[in-house]
Image (cartoon, helix red, strand yellow):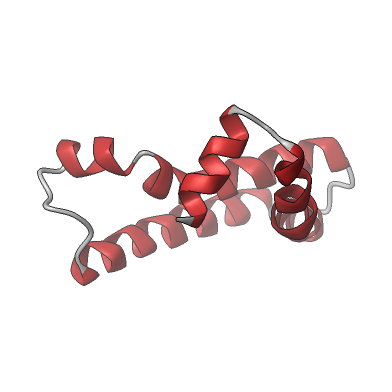
Length: 102
């Protein structure tokens, strides 16, 4: 339900998006931005923020594009085994990104 609301607000922002952004999205982006600046040693906040959004996006795609993913991988849905597989891929990608910046 939450993903559906966020997706709708991304496509058709209303006053509710202010709450979503300030209460959830902005703190998440800021936390990842700070992590990326710390790991990379590069204080360029805009670049770090773009990287943070890209890292976060890899998580959101598995919720927002669920139907495409399920069909592409011939799944019935997301089983616990498939969720673990997705989690591992996201962790591997994130570690690779952070290691490349260090």
